[in-house]
Length: 73
Image (tube, rainbow, N blue to C red):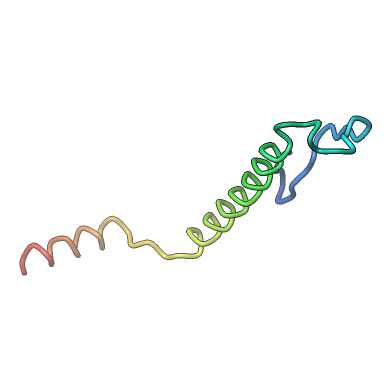
């Protein structure tokens, strides 16, 4: 699985060897869970980047002035 340009992509999907009974693949559930968690975390990180870009951060000078104001109190 890959994430590129805002899209999730599956690479090299081989459906010829998918088991009919998933008991044949002991780690299938674990693998599937890892893929889903990866996709959800990638989406969460992407949304976090969007939010951080939208938030206005104080400049260094205003941050310094706020620290001085707190120190005088």
